[in-house]
Length: 352
Ligand code: XIL
Image (cartoon, rainbow, N blue to C red):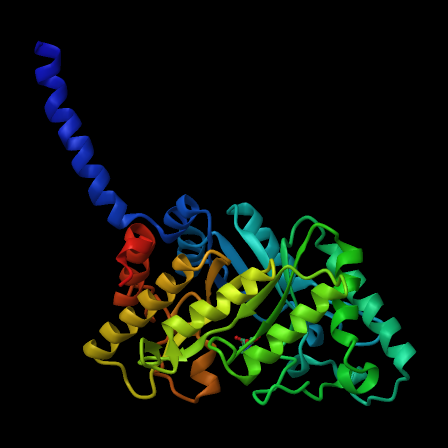
């Protein structure tokens, strides 16, 4: 009895502490418990101090933000450069993070030496095969997921006229997936694009593209929805309509594919005051809830660790865009707390 009397307060204290720490748990612990990935895009030149601490503490997946694109890895016809990717992969391994390789083919990072289009179809296919084999084989067993092709469809639902498309034709996409699979049969292969979150011409075309690929037995495992959004975009009646995104994810899931939210950020056009930051938090919560409520969605990846180094600052020429979960000084923003709470607490019963 005396033992019980002593134990009771101890147990009460333990119960209280557990419920308090649930709120304070790093995102990756909460995501692990749900068996999903929470990731961030990262750059090798920043892997120290607060940046390294936050990245490794909060995320169980790392996407290579810039350094695994072709214009970096294959800068001349006869050379490869894996310095940046190697550092990122080593960091991820040290911190038990899964790596998403981004990205094998993207028109925005196409090496100059190939840019003349002065190659026959067969020559271009040989170059692509050699390139994809070299990169994917190098990271076999270390990079678990590849964005094989990035942004190949236009907003109007047409094939984008990329150099690969011009040199090879429409089947360059399926060839790229086949080459990646040859190089590492265990790696997961994704098609990735922006502006295809809801049901629209672009997402319909992507749906057709991946359906055709599956029919032709092309090895594809998933589709990445980038989700570069603006604060205020997400909601029941807004451009990023929750219901429509969910339907889109589920129709891809019905094909047997996974969906990753690959490049999430929520920018703001001016300088964000408190109410903007609250709205941003709500939108982050919305996106996490969309993913948690749609079974095919297995990863949520933010496009950067801190507002300090977000790509949007340059892209929009707006130093105040503040689109991420941590501020310039690595302090968690309301958006961070919203993601943490959603990961800790959301159940599908919450949905109206
Ligand atoms: C961006 C990186 O964040 C920048 O650092 C780089 O200068 C340009 O590329 N869609 C994509 C990403 O698929 O690869 C882009 O990343 C952002 C838009």
